[in-house]
Image (tube, rainbow, N blue to C red; front, side):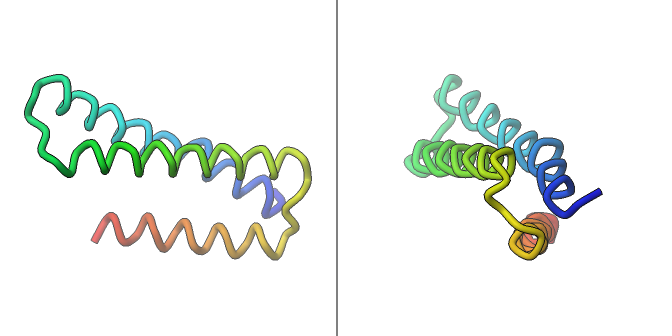
Length: 86
């Protein structure tokens, strides 16, 4: 598996699923009127993050990201995911 394929897999099967799950949770909070002033701001932030990852997938599909950049992005995403766990 190339670094580009690894990055694509990580984004599709981990990052976007996590982002979508969190967006759903935020929408449920808003719908149930249990949200606070930060909830809508967080929702906007997560929707923007999702858009950025989808753009990154488009760049991967177009072959615009080389192995070195893909490896760096994988490392950054893994660091981000590990921060969420801590």
